[in-house]
Amino acid sequence: MSQHIQTRSELKVLVVDDDPEVTDHLGALLRDWGYEPRAALSGRAASATSREWGPHLAVVDVHLPDVDGIDLLRELRAATPNVETVVISGDAKLRAAVEAAHSGALCFLEKPVSPLTLRSILAQAEQRFRRAEPAQEMSEAALLGDLITRSPRMIEAFELVRCVAPTDANVLIVGENGTGKELIANALHALSPRANRPLIKLNCTAIPDELMEAELFGHRRGAFTGAIADRSGLFEAARGGTLLLDEIGEMPVHLQIKLLRVLQDRQARPLGGGPLVNLDFRLVCATNCDLRAATLEGRFRQDLYFRINTITVTLPPLRERPEDIALLTDLFLRRFGAQYGHPNITIDEQATERLLTHEWPGNVRELEHAIERAVIVSRRERVTLDDLPEGLYPGYRCKRAPEDETIAGVLPLAELERLAIVRALEHTRGNKRAAAALLGIYRPTLYSKLRKYGIIEPLTSAQSSHAGIRSTPDKSCAIRYLRLVEISTWQFRCKRNRTREKILAKVRVHRRGVTRVCTDGGESCGNFRRTSLANRSVECRNSLG
Image (cartoon, rainbow, N blue to C red; front, side):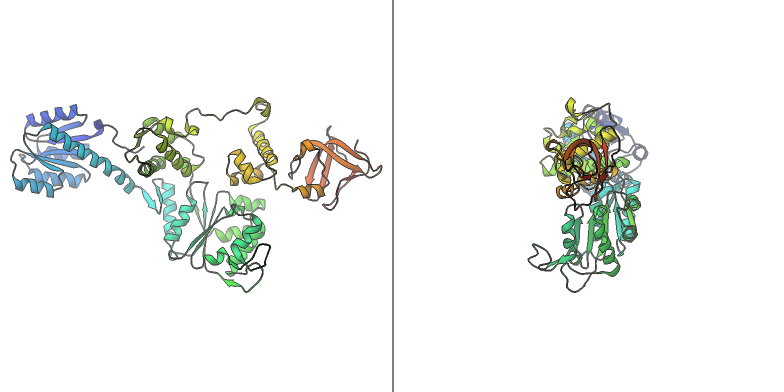
């Protein structure tokens, strides 16, 4: 955590006077007030102590045996620019006071120094030091647009962005959710020659697949139901500027082909026909998934991958750059403190320790929301552990599910996660947005887990009907997912005796129909004819019973 002044005992005060009685008297006062004093009886001793010790405040006598106090004042400020100084003298001449002011002294006091006056002056100096310290910390950090860091990996990313920004090279930004991919895109645009033209952003997971093409290419009136007027697409809206395609890894494959053609030809035709439109934009893409692995799995076109990643900017997660946690915490404390009426709010050691040890799966966005919440609910000018979100408490555990809904100890965690996803999809009838909300995860995270566990696109009710699947009412949502095998009761029509029978069976479903049926005992039944989607039921040569 940054070294904020939490108590006065951390504030170092150097007393410079050739009279030992004065230094002893002032030293005793400073110790009683909670400061940490040191004494110097000459200018040479004061310079050496300042270099070795680094005081925050200095009380300097004008008349010293070896140097002039004003000259020493200038020397101290040159060596330590942030030091605050108070000048004292037994000769209250106007000239000395003016020179002290010109040398940057906080004030000029006449001997004998009043303890009340000195204490008031030191309190003012302490406040000035407190205000100056955060600005000094920020000046030591690397800045890029709205981003700030001390992490060497992030600094390398910043330098890469500054290097590539003046060009029109396509840029791929890779990083987990909440690491600042969009802020990097903003900085790329702001530092480019296209900065005075629009920056258009599109999240590929926020628009249904059937509408995304019209959003990108535009459309003519009557191109589809609801197209009541001509509309320009985002490709054309970004003319002369920058187009950010966020979550590019979730773009449908058929649109990946069309995007590749646009990047090659720099032309596009709106939906519904019309002349080709010449395009001029700089493409920036962002993703939280491994596109190289996606190309190997066939989910992302390899030729498009090579086209969009001319330059790849990789952002490390917050857990891999712990030096930024303290820096960002200070930044958010000041921001939200000013916003919510707590300009001097700080954070205690326990809360700081918890922030430094948390894994931060939501990265900087999670930290920002945690600090905002803590500032809002804090009843003091100091954030404590109790003010942090519940999920950051040491030893925090999610509430257990009822015993009859969990099979902990029987299945591994991966299987429990898979079953939870399947049940959420069944409960929401295949609605991924609702399922992700039910599971408490982001929708892109749900997509990646669907791929991980082989739970692919759900069949619609019409496809299920065409595939010949007739489930019982209490199992209405079972076996609606490709590659998902469950046990349920299905109804088949026997071709030989024209009867319909229900049987407990395992059914593997494919887009073309039912490809495998097994009885509950595990024996494969080949007594059925594979059907196409046009058939209304599975026809069996013999009774499955």
